[in-house]
Image 1 (spheres, rainbow, N blue to C red):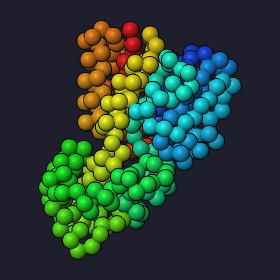
Image 2 (tube, one colour):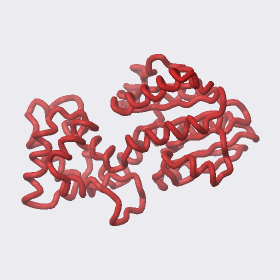
Image 3 (cartoon, helix red, strand yellow):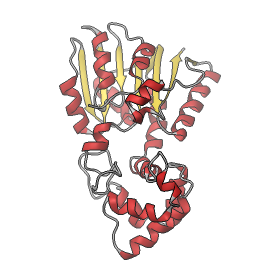
Image 4 (cartoon, rainbow, N blue to C red):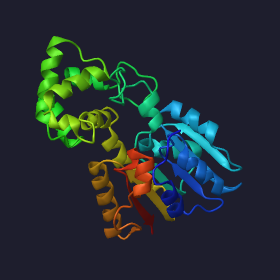
Length: 295
């Protein structure tokens, strides 16, 4: 089962009261929602969103409550539409966990993990149409400079130029279809010492492609803005990020709200996992938690 990162910290900071309305914008495996529902009581309401319908199915099997639970297949960037459909104007608490779940990495068969040979898709959507962007489309058709831009910008990959050049050369020979195809290309592009680092040499490239395919930065900016607008007075917004670019966006957004005197920063510095949590769940190592309270 997916292990939610910083679970105790999230639940303590949210300080759920019986009867609260809570938005879990990234239900995933349901780890946060399960704990939230235990605290909501009969009059409480949980609205859970996830663009991965298979994640919602798993969450439904896990979550139980006396209160009202609505799990909806939607990206949190569209929370305003969801709220309109549900006739909801304000919520008391919001949580976004921007990480990809263990189930999506290990079981989705959509190419999120470089450890399994799967189709190079990387989309969180369950049903893919011909108009949907995939990682295969990017590596086979985007020009070299665009590849460099996303690898350096979203992956912070120091060998972005070499990897991009290697991709462009390899695709002349055959279509890059699978995760293992791409891993082999990356391996040939980077120095041998880089291949033996603690973090796998393909990690940053895969991260950059996933962020691009799912427009995660655009979704985050929209979700932050719409979420804060729909947050009630003294409501709290908790965001867990795993990428420095995401964290910078959250930090700037929260600081702007503080400067405009419409929000109070609960966390001056981000909360990070303990050594014990990282040992138990290595994927938590890059997590940063930030919180703002609406005035």
